[in-house]
Structure formats: C-alpha cells, structure tokens
Image 1 (cartoon, rainbow, N blue to C red):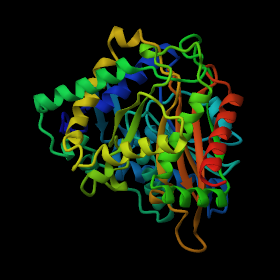
Image 2: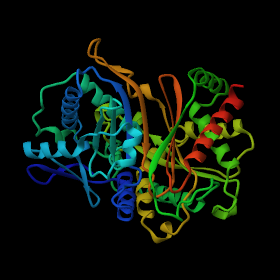
Image 3: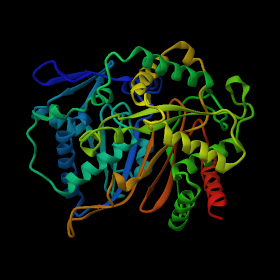
Image 4: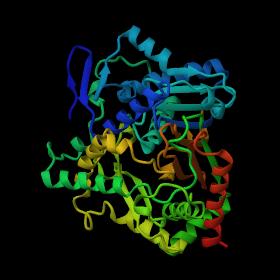
Length: 457
C-alpha cells in the first residue's frame, strides 16, 4: 500500500482498513444528508496574534497554510472510490486550492461557524477575526484526533517563523504511508491473525448495543451538530490527578468510568440491548499508535495521518463501584498493546480495521440498532502536542484555548477528555436531533460530580 506516481503530477495509493472505514461511513452519510460526512473533525484554537490588522493576519495565515501543504501534502489529498489521490499543483491549481480551503469567516465565533458551515471536500482552515479563532476541519479518513493536535503545532510553528513561498514538486516524498507499511506488517496479513481480527469485529458487533441513554438515533433525520464542553476548575483538576495517582489508575480511566456510571444511571429502559443484558457495557476504544512508530512517523512531521486503531471493550457485568469500574478500564488501557501481554495485537490491528471496513457495508450491520452511548476518546495532556505559545517576545502567538470535536451525523456521539493549561476538559460531540443539549450538559455535570465525590471529596 505504497504511493505510486501515475502521471507527471498525480500520485495514488489504496486506502487501508481504517481509512476505508471512514471513507465508507462518510460517503454513506453524505449520500443521505446533503453531503455531510460523518465524524468530520472540527478543531479550534483561540489565539492572540501579533499582527497589526486583520488583513495582515489573513495574509500570514494564508501563507502558513500554503507552507503547511508543502510540508504535509496529505492535507491536500482527496479520495476517489477507495484510492487516495494527490496532485502536485501548478500556480493556477495552488491558487484554486487556497481559495477553496482557506476561508475568512464573518462568524462571531467557532460555535456560530459550526451552525452555518457547509460540507467540505478537502481539509479546510477558517480564520475568524471577530473572535481571534482559527478552525480546522477535515474528513476523519484523513487523520485522527492526536494528528489534528500535532497539525496545530506544525501550523503555528510555521506561522511564528514564516519562510519564503515554497516551490512545489518534491512534496510527494512526504505523503504519509499506511500504518501497516510503517510497521512492516506482511501483505497479505498472516491468515491466523487475519482470522483473529475478523473474529474480534464480529464479536463486538454481535455484543452491541449495550446499555445506553435515551437517544432518538434511527428514528429521526440528522439535525445540527455541536460539541458541548465542561471545564473543571484548575484546583479540582490538580486534585483529581493526585487522587488518581494514589488509586493507581489514570485520569482517562477515571473519566471513562464516570461516564459509564452516568450511562447506567440514565439508561433507557426501552432501549435495544444485545442478548437482553441490561448491565453490559459495550464500546470501541480509540488507541493512539504513534508511540509505537519510529521517527519521523511518530512526530508532528506526519500529523496528517490516521495512525490509531479502534478496539472493542466489553464489561459483561458493570460493577456497582466506581473504583472497581475504573480499575477494569485502566487494566484494559495498560495491557491492550503491551507486547508482554498481547504480543500480536499490534499486527492484528490492520486485519481488524479491514474487517470493520467490510462489515459496516453489509445489510446485516445496517439493519442493527445503533449504539446509544458515546464513544470515549482521551487525548491526554494537550501540551504534549500543542504549545501554549509560539515565537518570541514581540512576535509571540499565545494559544489561549484549544478544543476538538466531530460532526455526528449517523449517530454514536463522541466524548473527548483532555487537559490544557492544567484544566481538565470534557467535550461531548452530538447531533441535536438525537440528543438534547440540556440533557448532555446535565450528564457532563453528573460526571464531574461523580469524579469529585469519588476521588476528591
């Protein structure tokens, strides 16, 4: 699955399993919902920029966006069928790309932009002068959450240290290979590992849906999307970190456990359940595989890539205890890709994602009830990927805030957890036609209450 040059300016490679899954899901939702791609990434940074005017800022941002394309050409790729495509631009094509993908928006802020934005064909950058925010959107088939944060680092670094306009032509050498190619996994995969990957997907699909809250997905058409946020006070955030250390589990595991407890407390008694088990929790966890990769693929140089894997997580009998639930979650986090415990899981991941791509296209899968709880994704400490400032005094770019969400079109909301500037933050991406904003806000507040009462009070 390597890139091949098919003409003077055109390069192609097949999508892998994960890229293919998001391509299938995005194309399916687009065919039903006026071009809207499921799980389109929406990420915002709130910044203080060192420019004298909005016009000067616009020029600098556009120049940095062009430089970012040269350094990370994946942001200008498209997908045709199940093939990724990159074309080296001439001057006219480059200008056309900039006009389509760099947008100065009159929206009051990122929240207002989210309500008026249109479907995109390629990764797109928005500058919002009124709120001094920059927004990045892309299809999930291009990159993942951690990659998005790394891309902010690359972009802001370029913005802080501008260079002369690049000469395009050699950038295809920097097109991202597939995860399997980097890890030197055999092609085709070993039959026994391919069988294991397919079995894991089938078992997860058959176990879903587990316990879930009230959700109208599957009964109404998709509506507006939003990401509702909750920020913990800095002192509370610090206390939670220390309490989790004392308990021996991660903050991510604690937040996930608090969500599970909230789901159980607000379970829909009339909701669909696989096997009728009202005390089974079934989800798919997102695992960042960049730490498993060699440089430069583990770094921000290859931010525009899909280097993670999903993996099923099931609790057949949810404990009554929050701490016990957190320990179960934490054990899974720590052992899933521990080579001493699960030596083959890394290699199985490629077959698993191919099986996922294939099964979601079957009539049997499409006829299944949609899971009503959110997928949980912990992005950890944001400063591992995005600095609080860039540049030097007098020309410093201050990053005041950063967040990330996705467009939920087909159902299955997403719950993100991360810290930035020593503050724990929760972000819940959902569709307003399926779930009520007031209900989501109350669930986030209940999670906060559980964490404080169980670990700090």
